[in-house]
Length: 101
View 1: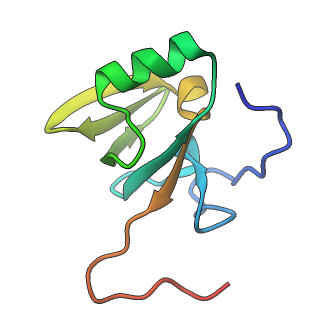
View 2 (view 1 turned 120 degrees about the vertical axis):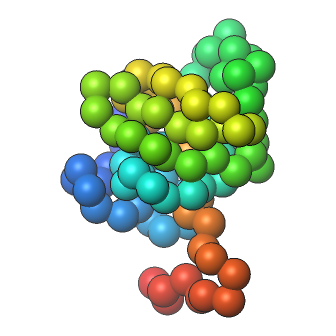
């Protein structure tokens, strides 16, 4: 699990650190790449079995009580609490450059 010291973004904001943020802080419609799974070994193993693996590209589709993502051409729902343990980076469209920090 997270230790509570990581920066968090307000709903609808972009990642506080553009290179890495929790999946629950990403806006719907954004494609991201998973960089790190935080949590117990049982939870991270189950996430990997579902397709939430490091370097996997996913797209956040909806964000309400649960988070709905497109993973490997399948739609999967996870809790927003679980989404906080998945650290991602935004994928920038080809030809565009990320904003300098």
